[in-house]
Length: 446
Image (cartoon, rainbow, N blue to C red; front, side):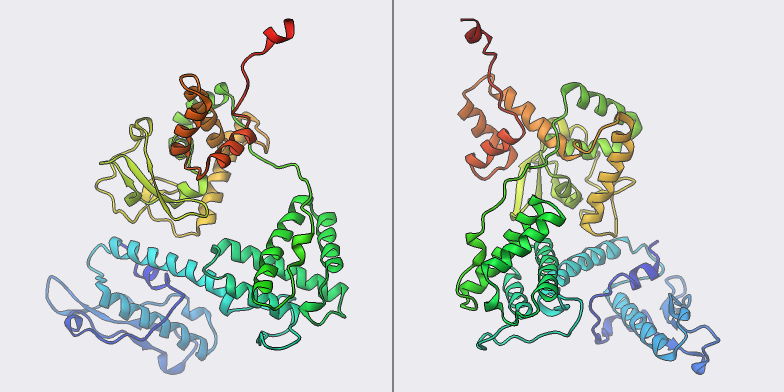
């Protein structure tokens, strides 16, 4: 039976006073606060009664303390108990019963909270405007003013990026803007307006990033600031996007290596007994060519074993549908009796609740793979979960090309992997060295 305190403390994003529902008044009493007449040495709590299904009479339920009595001021205790009272009332009106299993209600609320948290993250850039130089207060921007500060202009550009890019991208943009404005403040405090930032200043900042970190990170800063300066140019806040005239540096891209046939066979065989759950996770990456993050997003309802398809949200794309190959279908347990809202993968089982952020779920399986597999086989940082995607796309392409032309093989592969264009697929195949020529020894001996 779901613990009521878990449900009470789940939603911390929004609190709204609710009207009483007449249909439920007979089932429970209105939650009330016991404050011991203001005595902080005694325990404060929320209490209520609920109709006992056996007697039909209201029965006093266990007191709800939560973390209330950790606080030593009346204001803090009243505030927290007020939240508990309102949440409890809402739960009761939504159908919570202390005499029943409330699992479905908990799953529903967990999913709602996770969605609200994502929405809140995306809106935080627009509404919270934490100062970007670790000091000062929120700055209001009037785009009609002649002199707009660097911070104010970039804040405005970030606002206009809401609903255009993803939440994680917004967070990354904001973090990079934070460092840029801080650097401007420390090294060019004479600059008061965004219009005073010229190419020389921008190049100096990018050089600073390169020397402190890497050319790749420098290029990422260039991309981020270039995107925001383009917004400023489009809105006539700056005359032109300075970043367009600054070249991208050549870098050595990092990628996961492809496993050899023996390596992946050994790993699969080892995990059959050592960690079957992790093995199934890897097979979703291997056989359905999903990214680990995409696997972590999957819920039971996303897997349709009647049509052998799954739906998922891909990188920078809307919801997509993929065929589940029979080799993977045969590995799946019976999902028909599971609640569709449950996550497909949790630390302990297929189909369960896991109240943590998406990035944390991906990080958990990454670390689990490191401890169970990489340490056992002595694999270095070039190998990871993503390596299985490279491995099996390479394997599939080389198999397809045996019976068809390269173009036909790529056309078939493109449908399977989900690449949006042929050029994107061809670049990917080149990057992972999937395309190798036939043996050319005969030409060397001629």
